[in-house]
Length: 371
Ligand code: MG
Image (tube, rainbow, N blue to C red; front, side, top):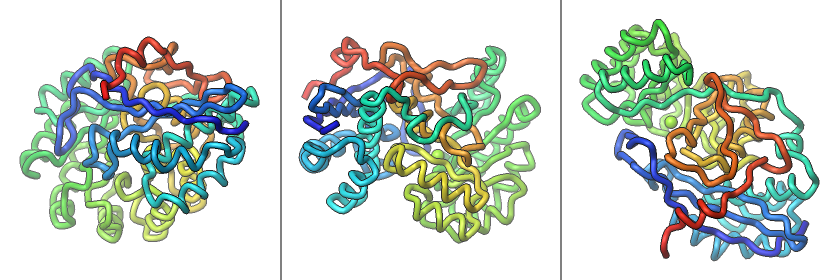
């Protein structure tokens, strides 16, 4: 299975409703479709995504395309797909960082590998520890009544029973009042988490987080900036509920340090920030060795990235904290023939060779960005 060519296409997919992060609101999501074609005609697909723009991790869709087309793809042409691990190490030596771009290629290589030998990526990774994952729904940084109404609708429809609230957009006092109103209304019937995207400093977190926990929030995600590992350890020690690291954990080395410093009870892993399937599975092994659980995060993927995430996450014994693989539910359309399946608050591991998804060429043509 020798790589013959690699093609990249930027797609812009509209969202069903605007999605608010702490510092921006998006109404469409760009993704970079990556196709690796082998000499015997197998096509592996992968997807590069960032959450709405470069604010989260420094990489952008446009930057990824240039990096892959100009630097990463030429290094892979003529190489053997079945040596994914060694190819990843080679790319790391030739291009520093750039985990989001490398993740898209890693996914496509795994898909090609699986298709070439007639096995699912999950089987190649050792097989499933589970066949489905519970899916938390992300509520935007909207006023309490809007958020509660959306959550109640999801609960009544049986779609989700755990929710994550975005925080950090406003003054801490206002934000805490809003979240406590939501928690008062929902905490008896649903699991609630908050994600601060690293917006607070240690003093603010020490002052306000116990109040949020007392109101019924059961998990606190990334309260402090990504670099403040010692501060995260202080917060993890202070609170009676789990603290989850997201921005603080990208590589297996980040995971090791967080675990050594006891700076998180849960690690949010995502294919994009973690360099793809290969990197995330390594991170899961480290977490498991420290007795820390992992949570399957999203960067708002289509069914391609969601399927890739499921193959990795379902193969990881330490991925015991559920997931937020709701990306395709936020998108108004998908780019595959049969999108990943959701049922009763769970998303199911796809079957079939490779990632188990088939690209819909009509959708690719419709959403391709004019360049
Ligand atoms: Mg997060």
